Image 1 (cartoon, one colour):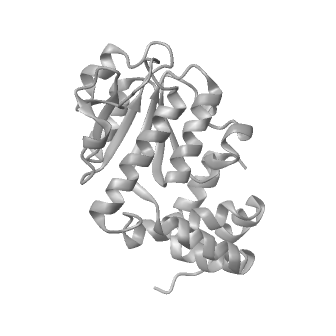
Image 2 (tube, helix red, strand yellow):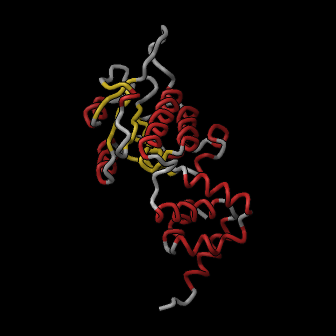
Image 3 (cartoon, helix red, strand yellow):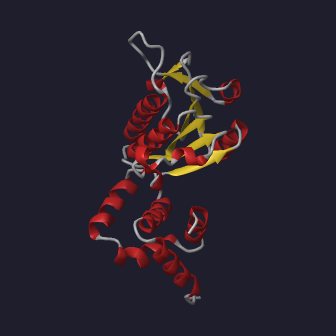
Amino acid sequence: MREARWRELLDEVHAAQVVEALTPYVTERRRSRIGEVVASRMHGVEVCLERPYDPHNAAAVVRSAEITGAGRVHVVEASERILKAKRTTTGAFHWVETTQHQGVEHLVEDARSRGMLLAGACVDGDVDLESLPVDAPICLVFGNEHAGLSDTAKAAVDLRFSIAMHGFSESFNLSVSAAISLYSVTRRRRAVLGSAGDLDAEAREELTARYYAASVDRRLVRAVIEGLQEAPSDG
């Protein structure tokens, strides 16, 4: 089953029904782990890569995003497949949403529609990483490994930030920069919110349904969802 169709099926039924129907097929240990991860997810923190050059760097960012609890990874002017190198991500792309944009303007439109602040990583940024605001949803934008952020991206972001460096090297590797930034922002956002995660009850249930579905054979998921669709409603 194609990834897009699988997600469409999940969207066609109530998350609570999916969780209830799949619970017998997910081990207790797995259910417990999923509960812990969902409780720590930060949909208010996202990361974007503009025209990434090295697939391994891009995939490493996905892994860092997943392990720090970030909600989504965007890629601009590159294939979404660049984020799904199994060897580098160790399967992390199964647990974090990825979105592809044809251009910076599409990323900006998407971010604005969801109230996200766009913060671009630049060597000459005028805001230090540790000073980035974390009390509102934020998307960290990183440029190409060689050229950095494009002029279009620099003009589009709400602010530009830099990571303090204390050696002779002029910059961090892309994946390292993203990992440091994600760790800093998610850690401080959790401290501000006083909570491990920032999802409301509905979002937690929807994510739990997706994680349950990702934990079992997709043929079973399809059969379960089709059964829910065919079941008579209470009304």
